[in-house]
Amino acid sequence: MGEFFDARETRSADARDAELARLLPEVVMAAARAPAQATRLSGIDPVTVTGRPALARIPVLRKADLPAAQKADPPFGGLGATAPGSFARLFMSPGPIFEGESRSPDPWHLASAFVAAGFRAGDVALNTFAYHLTPGGWMMDHGLQAVGCAVIPAGPGNTEAQLQLIEAYRPTGYAGTPDFLKILLDAAEPGGRDVRSIRKALVSGAAFPPSLQAEIKARGIDAYQMYGTADLGCVAYETAAREGMVVAEQVLVEIVRPGTGDPVVDGEVGEVVVTVLDPAHPVLRLALGDLSAVQPGVSSCGRTNMRITGWRGRADQTAKVKGMFVRPEQVAEIALRHPGVGRLRLVVTRMAEQDAMTLRVEAPAAAGLADAVAASLQAVTRLRGTVEIVPFGSLPNDGKVIADERPVG
Image (cartoon, rainbow, N blue to C red; front, side):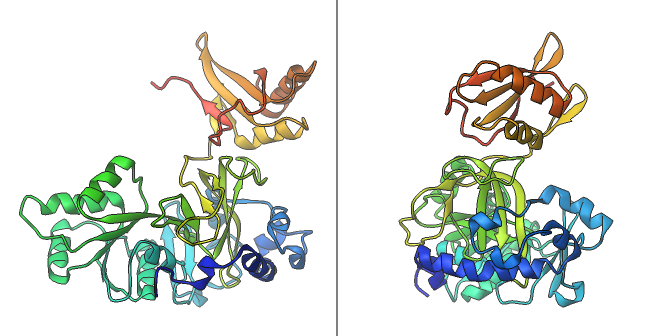
């Protein structure tokens, strides 16, 4: 198998674009068979969607809207053209969000992430993600088996039983949250339990701060991060280069300005939007609510796909001001009313025991611009606020369009 699972991981940009041009129309046509998708794709000819610019014409679908849509039209909100009985498994994730697992060897495309983390055929892996109702355990299980590993379907919790399993089967790899890996390692120490067989890990589902990374490394385990969701499977994964996260070959990632579907330039922080390049499981421009950025260049590990910088926070920055919700989409609408402006940031504070809004706008100094933007701010949000015109490039590159700076408590 070597250090790559799939030859596509090292292909040229031209080869990747050619496959994209072939697959995207098929994915869009497959999605259009679902009633809600057909409405969403009204006026868009699938055969014209052959690359990123054409894909960007399709409105984003927000993950936060899925529970309401699925409740109104169960089980999939009219977004899936495939009958429930055609799936291999059916899940319910927190939300609740209902999703199906397609009938393929690695339906959540995790194998490449495991190979990048050092897993190889013949390894024994302890999988501590849940197998009950949610897809996490099955996602990892499929990926490990595609690599050729033997899987211990341990699930979370029951630490004593887990330690017995480790001592009996001597797994070399761990799949689960970084928090539970630390729990296992800590629990093993007082009784002198031998968990030294574990030397590699693929972790996800929880924060993995540098302090915990250093602790796990000091205990002799080489741990790598995977970024994914229950709806999509693997989106991106860490490699030995430790230079951002390489996007999985089976998906297309866009970084867009929060509150819009408009892609931002490479390096700018924005919201992660994902399209799954699988006509059997078509997902078009699902906005995950997470912030990240494209990391320019190509990884030194040899994988040539786009890289993202990892998780940078949440894009859902809705704030309640004077009893009314102000949303990123409204800030985006204000920007559309004033061509030529750059980034906008709405800062919410407290002044004289009242909520106050200041909209900072990157734009060239121009007479009357601040007053015009202030009028748009009031028209769109139905709230008054002040406007500050600031130089281009002066607002932080952190993806925030609404910054709630009111004191807590």
